[in-house]
Image (cartoon, rainbow over the protein chains, first blue to last red):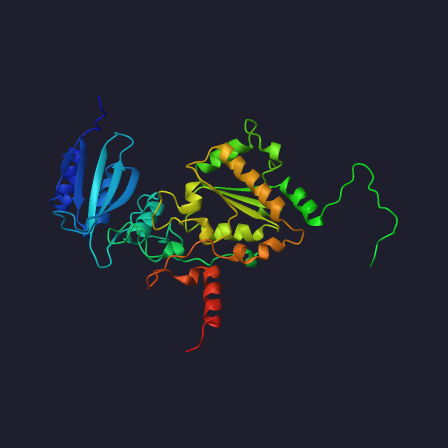
Amino acid sequence: MPHTPPAVDDVVAALAERFGAVEPSVYRGQTRVVIPAEVAFEAFEVLKNQGFDLLVDVTCVDYLDYKGAKHRYGLVYLLANTATNQRLTVRVFADDPDPTVASIVPLWEGANWLEREVWDLFGIRFEGHPDLRRLVMPDEFTAHPLRKDYPLQGRGERHNFPVITRDHS
Amino acid sequence: MAVENGPKLELPENVFVSKLDELASWCRKNSLWPMPFATACCGIELMATGASKHDLARFGAEVFRFSPRQCDLMIVAGRVVMKMLPVLQRIWQQMHEPKWCISMGACASTGGVFDTYAVVQGIDRFIPVDMYVPGCPPRPEQLIQAIIDLQDKIQREGTITGREFDTAGRQARKRALVEIAAPLSIDASRNPVLQRELAAAAETAPRS
């Protein structure tokens, strides 16, 4: 039988009390909430104080041309409480131009590289991040390649190198 | 100078006459020192080739060195991404001449199935390649065949001064570069190699 994490109703209730409608939904036993970007940091603070001590992952979805999507980017935060085994998926939306959300590095140190990766590949700016540099692409890269409007084969970056012949060496 | 009626030259036993070029090539081909540039699954086959079962020592090429300064055969095994290519070029330039390059597997030779923004579509666009090994990944036998073929090539055309590397065919780019649609989304300020190249291009370009 698949493992279902313990219910997080108390946490959802605490969030709803403070931030209004957080649109809780459950899919295959996993609870998801949506937090408005303006209060995201406060909400994460509340969650951390509720005992969510482990940030499992930060990632992003580009909803360009997605049916029924109201926002361009959807950030996904996966949180876990290692004492109670509770798990919670938090979603925060951001939009063009200059999609920005608050950095949660002050709360979870492990968010540092996760947010750098999201910045690198999706171009989401994390306000308050201590060192927002590219993580996987080279420093001279200027695009954010996992955005849906970036061509799969790139814009010629992979060809943009000097050619070394036997003369050079 | 006429030599007729001179003393008859007789070679002692176990002595034969050859060219210095051929002697040099014979030495070189039988002691290739591979530099493994293994970035993916081809690297596993490369290791298997060097291990006891396939035993690259039979062909005098078992001494893998991880410093380019001690090697004369670079084996690029696996895909090369654009972040890795400047490293690859630098390592190639650090190797002493005479030197050769084997492009092992579909990814190193053409990019393979990875036709994406980050993967270089064949290392021969940017560095010289002497031998291509097809396969995904190639079996050790195929790599051994490539090394034997490379030995043949060295014996056939090698010279002690390395004149064979100056021929036009060796200097030519192996494949045409893809025309790049402007504008490029590359920031050259962080890449010293690219800066030098751009500066050189600006100097040679006709002033308008």
